[in-house]
Length: 197
Image (cartoon, rainbow, N blue to C red; front, side, top):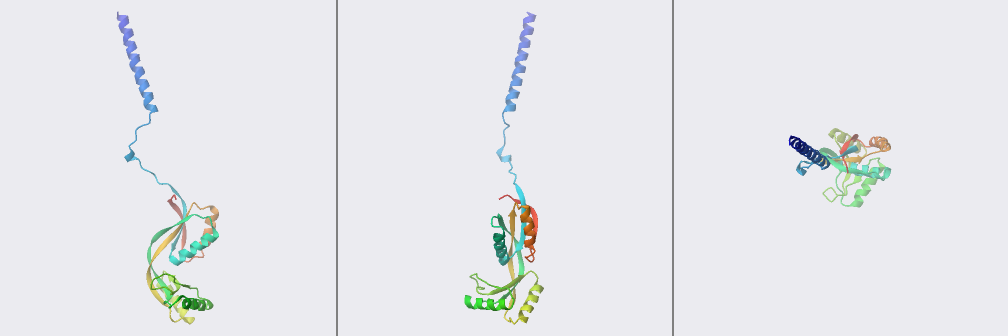
């Protein structure tokens, strides 16, 4: 009888151990439960060139140049803050034709300018430049007056600045951009990381 008891005891121990091993294997195969409220999405970053800080007229020109040089280039615009700039301008003319005649006169004098086209009080004014430094604006005003333009003035304006962000630039684009930046006063090119498009 003792032998039967020992055999049954051993069978029961083997049965319990077998069940434990089987349940551990099943637990390893099943994925662990996740708490969705604890899942954090990690943002992905990519290499970018950030070219800025442009005021409105400057960024329009920069975009035109970029589209001519790199027609397939992917980039985005981002705001980079406000600043006070000094606007050298000739007050508005009564109509577009009068403003264009004045622009032609300025071109003949070697002065770069363009007609303001917005629908505000400045429509048909002529912009002669935006300056970060008031002394630079005054210096340019004096140069303009020496050429015979007496009705130009300076006004300080709050200006929204923007950056051009070029996503995943190639080595060739980086090299070409370095050369291009030199043609735009008061702008800089930096390499950084940005959010993926």
